[in-house]
Image (cartoon, rainbow, N blue to C red):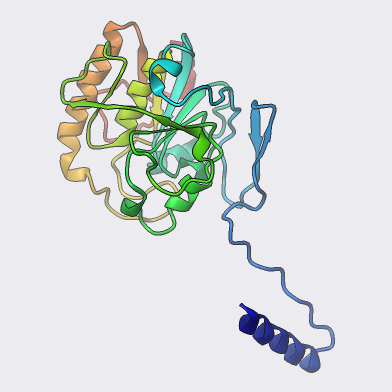
Length: 266
C-alpha cells in the first residue's frame, strides 16, 4: 500500500509539472452505491445510485432468528410483491405501498422488506454477491448459516427447506421449493400472511435486469417449473390468496398476467 501511494504521488507530481492547472480526479468509489443507505426509525431506507431504482418503503424490522414461529402470520392481510431478477422488473417504478420480498442481488434496483438467499455465495457470478453482502434489507431469509459473508449477519433469519413438487402450504415450519428462489419467496410471503401476491421479474427470458447476462440457465426446465408454479398458484387460491404475474414477458404462463393497476383492484 505504501509503495502504491508513493507511485500515485509521483504520478500527480509529473502531471502538475506538465500542466499547472492539473486537478486531481475524484477517487473511484469501491461501493456500487453512490451514497450509503440510511436507516431511519426502521421505516424507510434512502440511498442513491447511478442506475434506475424502484421506490420502496420499508415496513418491517428484524424481530427474531427463525421464520417459524417468529414471522409467521405477522403481516396478515398484506399485499406482497415478489421480485425476481429478470429484465421485466425494469418496467416498474414504485413498490412503496407493498411488502416486497426480493431474491439474491435485487438490491441493485430496490431495497426489499425481506431478502431471500438460498444459494451459497460461491455459486454467484463475480460481483453479484457484493449486493447481497451489503444488503440493507431488515430481514434476510436463508437456510444456510450463513450463505456467505454478509455485513448485517444479525439480520439473518433461518428457514427450513421442505419438499419439491409436493407443496404443502399448511406446513408452516418449512418452505417447499423448486429450482428457483422466487418460488420459495412466494411461499414465504404466504407464511408471512399475504392476502395478495404479485410476482415481477420471474421471467426466464434472456438477461437479468442489470445487464446482458445471456440465456437463463433454467430455460430448458421452464415447462417443469411453470407446472410447479401452476400447482402453487392453485394451492394459494384454495387458501383465498389472490395471485398475479405482473410481467407480461415472463415465461411463467400458469399465473394470470395483468398490469399493476388491475392487481391493485383484485
